[in-house]
Image 1 (tube, rainbow, N blue to C red):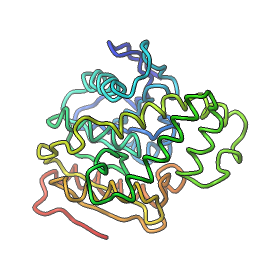
Image 2: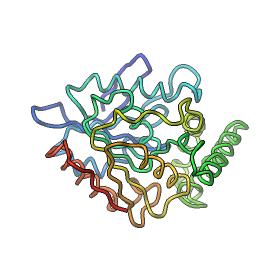
Image 3: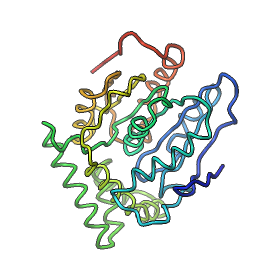
Image 4: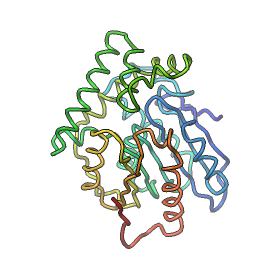
Length: 288
């Protein structure tokens, strides 16, 4: 796999093939605690007609944490610097798919580089700061409590308990304990980064960014069986994103792109096909 040395740090990423004339580029951004490998099924389904770039975000897979301490105030900017360097390796606009933390990163990337993003699909992006001053106060209290518990456990060095609590919220109680020991150790080691992500996502200085520049096609997916916080963020984004189509994935949980890809990938593939064949749409399609 290629490695890119950037001013922000070293980036490990999957690249399906060198760019070819007429072949669009798809950028895949994974969730917290995962790596580019979470997209292996989607990569297999798209590699014949797309150039796929799937990076490991900071602290995951083969991408180490930045040299400096991971602070909530700087971690999203560090991710932007990392992905900006990757975008510089690509000619023309890219299509972007992101899940959970990767979905939040995808939206931040689109806000920073709107002219570089041809289309954007996000599954339950965790832009939690949107909840702070919204009517979704039950969702805000829920995720603020989960985040503080995670940060507290990381603060006292109990990384395994932090990982167990994190997976209990997003997947199910006992999910961490059911994993093989090697996966438990990997997840536990990544919890300081997860704690920093929580801080960045809840404390974003501008809780309501200006989404008006995101006029590219945008697909927002949310599972019917997800958490209150994820539903709350999706409700806010449905009001704020200008070129949006929304689908509720029946039976989908928060980790559906990883654990239930058969529910999610057909929707993503359909969106990608339409965004390439008809990038300017007269009216967004919506479903609930």
